[in-house]
Length: 498
Ligand SMILES: Cc1ncc(COP(=O)(O)O)c(C=O)c1O
Image 1 (cartoon, rainbow, N blue to C red):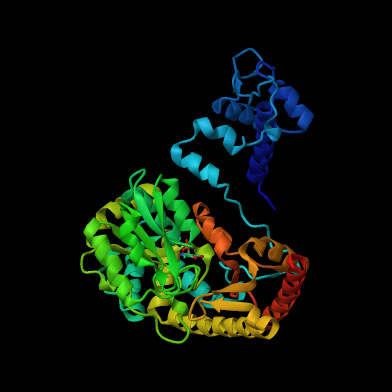
Image 2: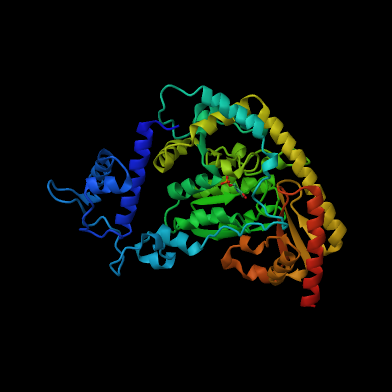
């Protein structure tokens, strides 16, 4: 039961909100006299004290003007005006981005032009071979809850801002983990916790690239990285990708560059591992130009047959590699936790960049993650989900062979959470038809073409149709069913295209 005080507070809040809403939406225009406190109290069955309190609050917030001896009136400017003079708060729409153009910064204009949209959600009954999301049932819920509870029990007495590079417990635990799992040697000073790899890329773009500056990217590649650089006015220099990853022979001819972004352990999306000779070539190219290299190590935990090879960062003796990792592929993309291993020369400027962006990552989740790393439960979890993902990948490979055999060629099975599947007899221009035909069979598949830079459409004409098929969300029997339906869709498209 609420106490009298609570009841009064509740009633006065309701009355306050009602009057404020009516003033803001123009029902009570400027100058409208309000009923006397006595009349309103009688009308609503409230005490005069409650109504007076509400009027005092409305006056303090600038919605009404009270004068002794006269009725309180709605203040001028408190109503949200529209061009027609009438206020329609509820109907106010956000202006379309192109209408905003004149009032946006160059970065805002670029982001508006990308027209980035969330994909439509998977409909019930649809089998979605999407790459990116993880299955909620793979998340180590109990371990995570235990860690969060333990952390909350030990909340520190002083709730103050932390080091922008992140919580020290997590950075120490991560340093030990990276040394053991990736053979990566760094000091805790070099480690910075970020809000997913995307923030690492955003900081690199802002802090290292001048407007118009060249950034080498893989093509096809991770478009979210491309967008981060282009948003700040970078000029993308697209290098081809072959069966061994980035074609480093092309680097010299690409023109001046300040930065290169690469996925050397598992090229996204093609899945290749960058051989040692190309790694050396890339580092030499960077050293000659004083360029930085971002090594995006987004899914090295899923190397199935052999341990992941040494990082590019560990070959770098000139301090030009920025190593970036994420927990989006092992725990959850919703966690928004990633990390950077910075060359010593960049530590201070990146700490400053992070501080002015969002001060630092949320402390509670960082400390909980530190516990998982320290007590071995993170490693156990990774071993468990690696086995699960391998079973799913095997199911996908088997189903593709069973239902489509030689009609498809598969790339990138050595690691990761997706495969690239090429349809030998279909031209790239038939990708959309394949996607649509699959949708009619209640299967969602995702074409590879959007991962090529739009300026390189000529490449489209030379290759077959391809799909990026993720399997992390699906169990083996669903994968089998989905591929069987995809084979039907393929048959239909082949018949249509002759
Ligand atoms: C190449 C690549 N890098 C990084 C990420 C992870 O990004 P984030 O850490 O921002 O979730 C992904 C996710 O799909 C990816 O494909």
